[in-house]
Length: 218
Ligand code: DX5
Ligand code: ZN
Image (cartoon, rainbow, N blue to C red; front, side):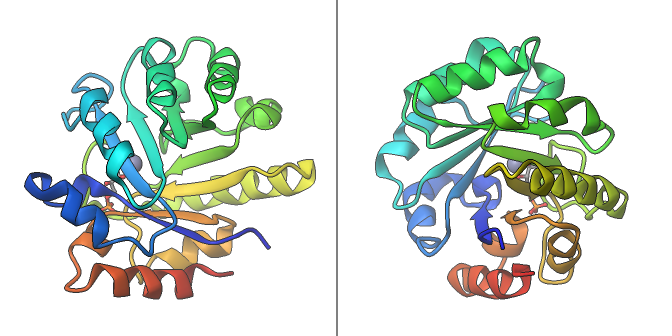
């Protein structure tokens, strides 16, 4: 059974107190950092200078999710900054295999993300080139959206392909993950769960992480 990981998204944290917000989730497996450029998605969050500092002070590894155009040009810089896991969107990369190899060569784990409407089949041949497949369960751009059940068959197909390959590839879901929805994604085969509002919107983020972890084990 693949390890169940809960990665809170700091998109829902207090941006004026990011260091303190990181320490509130020190029982997380990693912290999910959403980078948005207002082009690939209609929202703007934070970029490389902030991520570099977060990487230096975070008690947990960084899981960067790059929702940016020109991923081929920008993603390697996040690996150079020491980010443990760098995920770029397939839709924003001209040469995803080359980019994944560049990330790994720089010591980062390489993640490939797919929007809800993007098929997984064209990318199954490159499972050996990546460490994580991220299937978006909302349209990327904003926290607090509703989980899209239509992504469940794709999660199942991805899980079947990963298991058949025998490779150690994590299957991450991101968007609308709560205590009410996490079991559906887990049942479909996801093992790494991003949760923004469900963690930072809770009175007790560390407790919310534990409750999600208990529900996310399949
Ligand atoms: C959305 C981001 C998510 C977001 C998740 O584009 O990629 O990581 O923060 O937020 P929730 O868990 O509130 O849906
Ligand atoms: Zn994200």
